[in-house]
Amino acid sequence: MGDFIGERSRQILFASWQHFSLVVQCLILATIIAVLIAVLVYRNKALAGIANGVSAIGLTVPSFALIGLLIVPFGFGVTPAVIVVTFFAALPILRNAIVGLNNIEPTIVESARGIGMSRLKTLVSVEIPIAWPVILTGVRISAQMVMGVAAVVSYALGPGLGGFIFSGLSRLGGANALESVIVGVVGVVILALILDLILLGIGRLTTPRGIRV
Image (tube, rainbow, N blue to C red; front, side, top):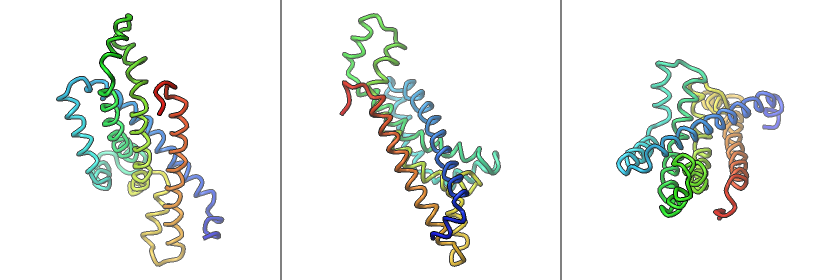
């Protein structure tokens, strides 16, 4: 194992960086998309119910099947990988964003409007900051989930550590096959832990002191 890692250290580090970068960029994009959708639908019970239903159903879609469908129009490479990871990342964030915004006390919103805040300013300055801890919990859940999904997208020749896993599995029983799989799996776990610690720190820095748990 030591020889395998030593001989391929640069390749492992580069693949790890690609994997981490893919997840972080897709997570940022998914957060923006999910929060925007939540803002548009959370006041309407019917639309919020539809959004939550789509979120629940979307999580049942096999990532392999979605990748297979996207390869046809987009081919192999980064594009289908980004679409798949962003899609799965957005689902828990959307659900949590709707829950967080719906759980805000109406009196708080009324008080903000009463002192002359516009609807948009109330949303940005009051509602989203209060809902942020719940939204961030969804982001953390998504981060752990899509770290594994990002490994699967290597099936479409996407970037990341999944290449080591699939390469090893395709040669199982051959030289260094098991080592390749272990490096990929352990690498994904380590990256997931690192990202969760980063998100935990971001939560401490961005959550208003008055609503920290």
